[in-house]
Length: 195
Image (cartoon, rainbow, N blue to C red; front, side, top):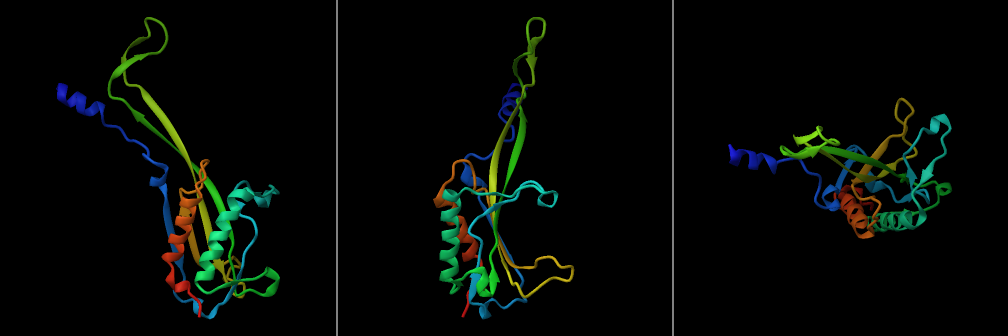
């Protein structure tokens, strides 16, 4: 019985040990689309934060310039390596490359199986099962490639390629981690290479 109690006392779900443990890179593409025939792209000069409701008149928020600058530069570097030339949106680009971000906060709870607990003064103290809560916030970077000449049947934007890097945009911004995630998204997508 004592061994069981000791074993149970050490078992409770834990969050990540390091923030890097949350980094995930996902990509998706339309396999019926010919990226090889494209040569130019345009993108905004800012990274929009997905917050609020723009349909309701909320003002868009943007990732601060010192953070957004290195991210956009790394995206441009990868696009150039694939053979694309960046042009202005008014120069009739073959592809548009919107970039966005959003944050998510994860809260998790865990319980100790035994311990000393008090809820105030006598007689409200004694043995109990204390609960603990913790949380962490991560950000996701979204990149997409849109052909401005293609519109879906319902009039919505149709992405030919999407890349998402989750976990990289945190309060302790690390440009190395972000660059690695962006590089991984493009490395996973060799089909983007142009002629």
